[in-house]
Image (tube, rainbow, N blue to C red; front, side, top):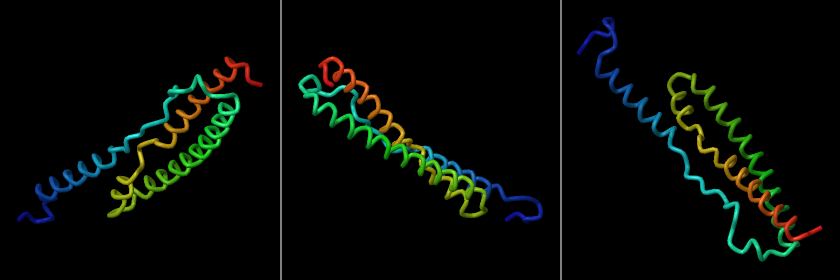
Length: 126
């Protein structure tokens, strides 16, 4: 066993590196996001009322998702600032949500609405 005055033992360094690597890998894994499809079967058979109803529902859901995304960003910021705390800080930083799930789903709903608005115009809906 080495004297601590002479430096950190190599086994201890390697252990820290392995822990750091594992936490980084865990932090980089993100949830699999499956957004709504822009074009869906049966779109051409939707009535004007159906189109308007879907557009309104998608807008409301996208707004909620964007608010949720902002909350996730704020939590991530707090976790990363807390990451500077010795000891538990690395675990806080490793729990950062990197999936952007809310952002991806909101964007998909807004893209879907573009398709639905095209159908509204194509069908001559008021």
